Image (cartoon, rainbow, N blue to C red):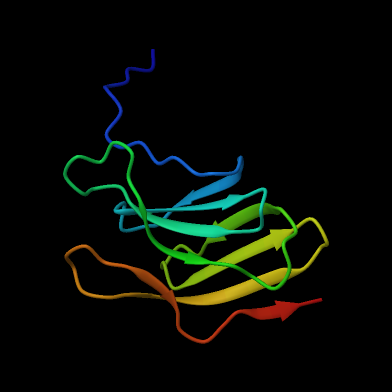
Length: 111
């Protein structure tokens, strides 16, 4: 049977979250919400309950994010919204402490 422990972190967004992805470093969680916002959370910070995002990205437009994925090597973030637009970002994690993810050269929109 599946055994669970108490929640390690709680991330609360203003709008309903449609999709999440865990970064391979297991420190960062990426969420996409109904307002079209993508947030990156550090889920290892002490007192992780009611965590605040370390960075937020707002692709062009305000269409809800439907799906998010992170490449296995942790270098790419891909998001698709309700309009069918697909965005790709390079992920840069600054430092090993309270790292933040930032768009290095994006987004680039794909058809």
